[in-house]
Structures are given as structure tokens and as C-alpha cells.
Image 1 (cartoon, rainbow, N blue to C red):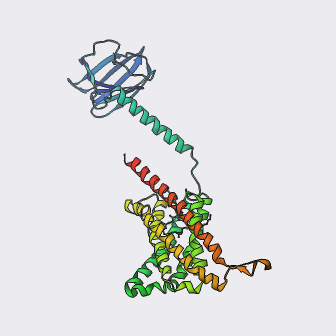
Image 2 (cartoon, rainbow, N blue to C red; image 1 turned 90 degrees about the vertical axis):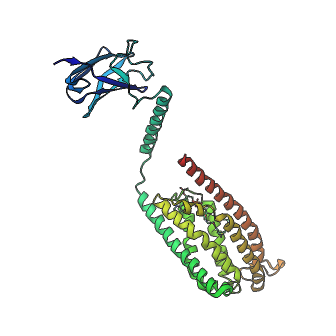
Image 3 (cartoon, protein in one colour; image 1 turned 30 degrees about the vertical axis):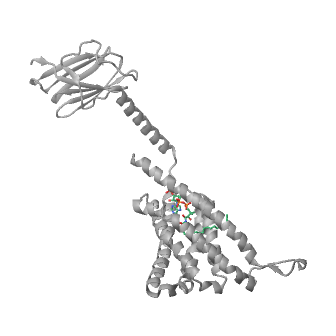
Length: 359
Ligand SMILES: CCCCCCCCCCCCC[C@@H](O)CC(=O)SCCNC(=O)CCNC(=O)[C@H](O)C(C)(C)COP(=O)(O)OP(=O)(O)OC[C@H]1O[C@@H](n2cnc3c(N)ncnc32)[C@H](O)[C@@H]1OP(=O)(O)O
């Protein structure tokens, strides 16, 4: 049988040489590297039909003697490791390229592209190494299950409040303002008592956020609900209750579903946008409505002397709780500033990381 030379295509990376030998149904492959020369011999169907084909290549720089080969129906793929990670000007020691050798344009990269590919591979390996070092949290599923159920219950609670108030608003119009408290209070008490968990969750590391913003949020709401509305019957039929409860519920019917999706590593763009956007008008409006409620309650605390602070005889009977509430009014706007800034940072971080992923 005549011995012929097959067509061989080559490409390189900083660490490897790729050879593609055009020989289909290759049999009796004999491939080896001796003294930096690759020897190839096989039978198969090549450029000159079914024959025995062979070639040898003396490499420009030292290579390792191990050869990786993979035969497919149409070709034989060979990978050779360079001794040193470097870019070669050419493949062979001889300057003139052998006639049977040509660039493999399917895998051809110039030096800079190969460097980028190498860096991308190294980064990927580093990322996997770092991730493999992070111990998997054995309680992760339990935590996510707890958070999912918490958010679901809160979503259902605030959805009931929002729908109930909306339906009554359409039916009763402004008359619905005055008995909001008696219709909604029990569900709001339930949701806001449960919301204390939102201070505990970050404190236990169950969610990645600060304790202070949650503390301000939960304390701020529960002071209004339990002290201003819950303690004073005269406050419970005021229209301000409607506005406070409505503003509270509007954000929650977006915030809690956003958290539920986060628990299952999912996000809907529109929901994320709403969660991190509608607080901008709602937060100041909510604090404003709460401030109106506090101001309206001052005279009632003066009159009823509820929660008044007993004073030493010399200083008179007692200090009206309205004085405490006047200081609280200042704290409210401080709390508004702190949480407004916090939410703005959260929004920027969220949309910045999204932009980075999209690029
Ligand atoms: C120190 C005591 C001082 C007391 C003084 C009191 C002063 C009172 C001041 C007035 C306070 C305001 C009263 C309030 O009633 C005003 C209103 O609510 S008006 C209506 C509009 N309101 C809003 O828009 C606020 C809604 N509430 C919130 O956004 C949160 O409560 C807040 C704490 C403000 C911000 O939440 P958070 O810090 O959690 O930010 P993120 O939502 O971006 O979440 C950060 C990451 O944690 C993950 N996370 C958080 N919670 C959960 C959860 N339950 N389940 C699952 N995951 C959760 C979230 O996914 C984020 O993770 P990632 O970044 O990976 O997405």
C-alpha cells in the first residue's frame, strides 16, 4: 500500500498545540513524540482515498511527550502540551511550512485573543475554586422555606387589606375613610406584629440587609398602629387612618412577592422595578400621613392624659405624652431620611448589578 501525507491543520494557544488530521475512519493509529518530533501513521480515507498516511513534525519549541488524540468519523484531533506557556511564531523548527500543513481557522486565534481566552478560563477556574471553598449552608433550604412562607403570609395579609380598602373605596367613596380602622385593624395588627421578624431576620443573618432600616421601619409603623391609632378611640374614625393603611399596603403587595421570588432565586423585571421605584413617592407620603396622625393625636393625649409621665410634686402633676410625640415627630423625619437613603442605595445596587449582568 502506498504511503501518503494527509492534510494537517493546526492552531495554538499559550499552552497547547492543536492538530487536526483530515483522515476519516482512521485505523491502526500510531502517534508518538520523540526528541520533540511528532510521528503520525494510520490507515484511513484521506485526500488520496483509502491508504496508509503518515507525517512528522519537528516542533519549534520543546513540547511534552504525552499526546492526546481523539478520532472522529471524519478526522483525528491531536493535542500536544507545550513545555512552556508561550506564543510561537510558527509551528515547526524548519522555517518553510510543510506543504501538507495549514492553519486551522476553526480554532485559530491571534495572540491577544488567546490571552483573553486564557484569562477568561483562569477567572472561571478561580470562581469555581472560590465557590467550592465556600461551605454549602446545610440549612439553606430551611431558611429559604421559612422566608418564603413568611413573605407569602405577609403578601396575603396586605393583599387582603389593599383589596378590601379598594373595594370599599369604590363602593362607599369617602365614607370608607371613617371606618377603615374597624374593618382593617385586626389584619393590620397581625401583619405588623409579624413584621417584627424583619428585624430578627437580618440580625440572624437570614437576609443580607441591615438591622437599623428594618428597626426604623417596624418601630415607626407599630408606634402609629398601636400607640396613635390603637390606644385612642378618637383617632380610629379619622380619615388619616385610611391614607396611612393604604400607603402601607400599596408597597407591600409588591415588596413581599419580590422577596418570595428572591427566595427561589427568581426575579421578574417589572416586579423588581416596582419594588425599587414606587417607594419613592410612597415613603414621604406615608411618613407625612403618619405625621398628620401624630399631630392630630397631640390634643387627645393632652385631654386624656393617657401615657402621661408622672412628675415630682414640685413640677406639677404629669408631663403630657404629647411632648414625647413632638420629639418623636423629629425622629420620624430622621427615620425617613435614613431609610430613604438606604432604599436609594438598594435601588442603585440592584439596577447597577443588573446592568453589569446585561453587559
Ligand atoms: C432605632 C429605632 C428608632 C425608632 C424611630 C422611629 C422613627 C420612625 C421613622 C418613620 C419610619 C417609616 C414608617 C413607615 O411606615 C413608612 C412607610 O412604610 S410609608 C409606605 C412606603 N414604605 C416603603 O416603601 C418601605 C417598605 N419597607 C422596606 O422597604 C423595608 O422595610 C426596608 C427595611 C425599609 C428596606 O428593606 P431591606 O433593607 O430589606 O432592603 P431590600 O428590600 O432591598 O432587601 C435587601 C436584601 O435582603 C433580602 N430580603 C429582605 N427581606 C427579605 C425577606 N423578607 N425575604 C427574603 N429576602 C429578603 C432582599 O431580597 C435583598 O436581597 P438581594 O439584595 O440579594 O436582592
